[in-house]
Image (tube, rainbow, N blue to C red; front, side):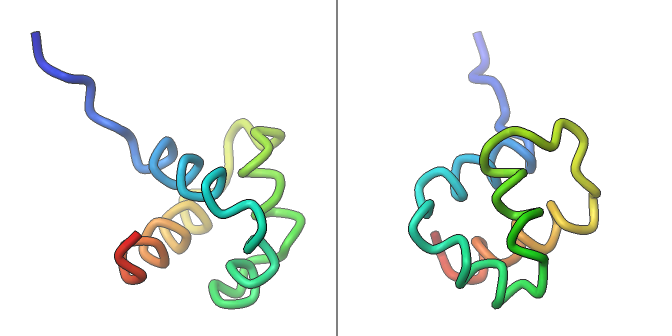
Length: 65
């Protein structure tokens, strides 16, 4: 059976969870408001904007994380 593919949202959430202590820096570097980054990381935002998720995805991919 094929391994499930991780969605972009799941990837971003996993990376945010792994970088909890850097959320302020991530928010600053991606130009996304801190409360939005934290809300995505906490799972409070069930349907975040594609724009923000894509920016976070690109940030982590560029950082090689």
